[in-house]
Length: 256
Image (cartoon, rainbow, N blue to C red; front, side, top):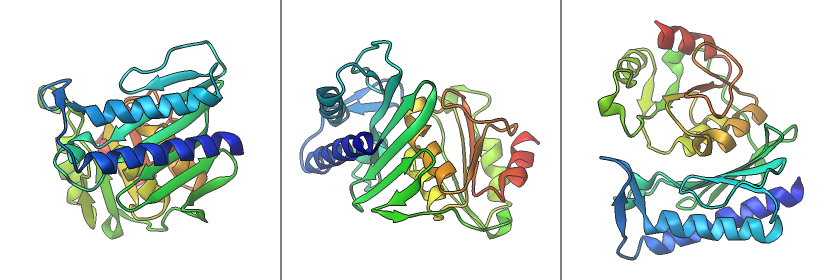
């Protein structure tokens, strides 16, 4: 597992450097939807990450946001978001990241999330805890929403959906100490893991958005479920993550 973590960290840092270098240049921006962007930097990062991983593990499966890699029916699958927070990136807003997770026989066993603007590397290994820049991290101990800072997001087709998180946003805004919407789910989950946020929820995320951060929270002592409180799977379309103390209060609001 240490070898897997080393490759993931190296790939994240390589991707992060491409992102920082790309901020200084004109970017080719395309649209996957009305407000869903993809850039040449997304593709460049994904290419570099996949080449790094497959150079060492050529027989492993790859599931990456922009479609790189292919299925080889391996018991190992690398799940990659080369640039989470593309909208932030295209506007020069300094919060975005690379997220890489490893799934083994259906279980996430390793995760890495790198935010290059602050040079923050989050790493987690199943059963071995989670770290930020080499130091162990743990979730907060806030016991009520009234004393909590929480975060959420809005999926890119929320304008066309009746279930769009706006009602939940309003209800939790009125209960929490404060609420943030950063646009980078992988970072939000890591912030729950290290205690900066107390809880996070969102709809319609993809495996590459949540795989690494989900493990990060569990290894830092937190809890991740769907809205009903069922055991979370990365292919679910609901995620509710917290320090554990807030799970029930959050669940009651989201289901009300």
